[in-house]
Amino acid sequence: MNNMNNDDINNSNLNTLLDTEIVQHNNVNNIDSVDIVCGLAWGDEAKGKIVSQLLVTKKYDWVCRWSGGSNAGHTIYINGEKYVTHIIPAGVFYGIPSLIGPDCYVNLQDLDEEMEYLYKNGFNIDLIKVSNQVQIITSNHKEEDAKKYQKQQGSTGKGIVPCAKDKYGRTGIRLSEYLINNPIKTKFFNPFKHTWCDVDDNDFTKDKLYGNILCEGAQGFWLDINQGSYPYVTSSVTLPYSVCSLGFPPQKIRHIYGAAKIYDTRVGEDPFFPDEMNKNQILNQIGEVGKEFGATTGRGRKVWWLNINKLCDAINISGCTHIIISKTDILDIVKAYNLHINNSVIQFESLDDLKSHIVNCLQNNCSLLQKIIFSDSPETVEGL
Ligand code: IMP
Ligand code: MG
Image (tube, rainbow, N blue to C red):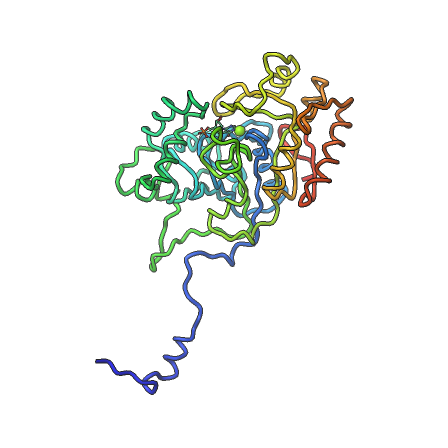
């Protein structure tokens, strides 16, 4: 028997026991701030442009995707050239490390194609990191999506729903497990370079987020699995609170930039979204002039007047500090300035009238908002 009394504990042992500093997995103290860009509608609100502008004007050490998969389509202009990405965060266009976070769904072939596209256009794909906790979208997932959900719900066919079912059924395959059991058939996705899984001698993850982080949202508020128009939603949390799945506490969040358009659009099945495209020539015109075709699927989007009640809800529940309302120029081309408010459509005389009514509504109903910006350029956001 090991009879130890107090006298056996000498002073130096006691000091060791009282030492409260322990080795930690994460490195929360190294994170200064987190800014977020999120969609406030049904996706396609020009989030890519806002992310791009923030990366030009502010200093970020990391750009991270926190949700979704290749179902997203982010359009970004670099030196006048248009680029479209689906899963890789926009940091890669600006020489900033870019992480695909643990709550994302990834098909390695799709990722590889996107890496090839960026590589061939001269961007540094070594900056891309993929969490080893992402769920792998298999070809079976894609087949099931195409057979069932693409027809029923107008899903993008990227395998998101079946992969999410496996994730929450706890039968999904994470990247770390996939890499152990499968030979890598991809050309550009190199697990040694791109996986977030290097460990040090103590078996702790070496890769860590630090500094100022920009989180790039995918899809939008009304496609959120909890707050959206269920079941006509995607299988992710699109709201900003979910950035914490990247591995930091909510206290680190600084600004939340919400993206919206001055009219609403919807791609995919949704009986809750007004469908007046057959009857209303102006809505069709907005779709044409605004090039409202899916960046991922090429499908035409339904167009409706901006629903200001829904927008206020989305801003308030998301916690937006800033809002950027894009595509104001499109309404000026078709000369129609309508707003959906309290279940009716109100007509305004001019773009200025419409804008000032929107500003009044937002100022009176969204107490967290600090800044309202209108944007009429596909490439930049002035005043951000
Ligand atoms: P899924 O995300 O492919 O399962 O599709 C579910 C629904 O979300 C469908 O109505 C899609 O059209 C829609 N959706 C998914 N991603 C996006 C996006 O990035 N922009 C717009 N709609 C999207
Ligand atoms: Mg899009």
